[in-house]
Each structure stands twice: as C-alpha cells, then as structure tokens.
Amino acid sequence: AQSVAQPEDQVNVAEGNPLTVKCTYSVSGNPYLFWYVQYPNRGLQFLLKYITGDNLVKGSYGFEAEFNKSQTSFHLKKPSALVSDSALYFCAVRGPTGRRALTFGSGTRLQVQP
Amino acid sequence: DVKVTQSSRYLVKRTGEKVFLECVQDMDHENMFWYRQDPGLGLRLIYFSYDVKMKEKGDIPEGYSVSREKKERFSLILESASTNQTSMYLCASSPGQWRNTEAFFGQGTRLTVV
Image (cartoon, rainbow over all chains, first blue to last red; front, top):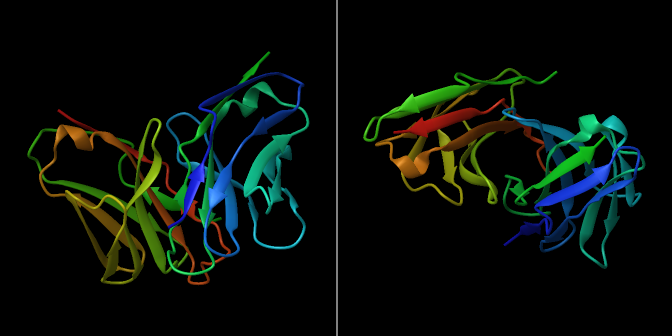
C-alpha cells in the first residue's frame, strides 16, 4: 500500500520569506511524486513532479521541490513567498507498479501574511 | 490545454434522491477518476476507469457507482444520497501512458445533501 503524510495542517509565513511545505511518502519501489495547489472552491492545479533524475525539481509559479530518497520526503519550497501563494497544497504519490490513481496527503493550508 | 469539465459547481439534493455527477474530458484520455475531498482527509479515491465500460473500485466505493459509456465521459452515481455524502467531488483524467504523468482535474462539484 502507498501513503502520503503532510504533517502540518497549516503553515504561516510572512510575505518575502522562504516557505517550506512538508511531505513524506511510503511506497514500494521508486516513487513518482507530485504537488498540486487548490485555490478556494476550485479544482486542483498541477505544480510539479519528480519522476527520475535531479533531486531538485522546478515547477510553476516559482515553486520547487526536493526529493530525498533516504528520508522518503518531497518537500515543496519557494525562496520568497507571495500573498497570492495562500492556498491549499496537496502532495501525491504513485508507485512503479499497480495502482494508476494518485494517492494524496491530507493537504496543508499555506497562509502568507502581508 | 487539457480540459476536464464537471457539469455542476454546486448541487443541493435531498436524502434518498438518486444523484448524477457528470465529467467530460477533451484530451482522449484513457483513465478517468472520481475523488471526494473532505477537510483533514485530503482526496480519497471512489472509483476509476481505464477504458470504456471498464471500472475499478477505489478506497471508498460504498454508496456510489459509476458509468463510462463513452471515452470522454465518466459519471458518478449516488444511488440513494445520504447526508454523509455531503462533500466536494473531483473528477480527474490521465493519458494511457499514465505512469509518470500528472492527472488533470475538473473544477469540482460541491454537493450538499439535506
């Protein structure tokens, strides 16, 4: 079975400061990892993914994520937060075999204060 | 751009009603998914389909059924709506080469059962 943990329900950061949203995963074999963002009353928008190769992945809106195999983590980062980054963020995983559907974490609400 | 369209943004239904949620994608994707989203629980997979007329149960299929008569359309059916099915429902699709590809989401349907 595969699973994702997002240990923080909410992350608060001041505008202009760096932000990190944490994600750890459990899967058999090499993982395929994804980050999505959800704005109020909207669907999920894809931000970035790790498939293979460089552990630092760059995505949309200045976000990046670092894959760490030994710690089974895939934390989302941004060097300088914007108020408009305030939203709900979801980490998701898919294993190398079996289930086609993504398995999601519980989500982390990011609040960026002006 | 891939477009996944859900037929309603908001629905209010009465307990015991049969409810249909419709989803259409325009990118000829083989795989389609229905998730429900609840606060603190993230997204949970209800059903998915990998081809016309083919379906598989997800993690929480009880009280739901699905129909896929055409490749572009995937319907979620609540046979007899109950108040505990009040939730946000999200449809997604992904292509046949699904392993390292992100899923594309619709805008969601917020269903309230009274």
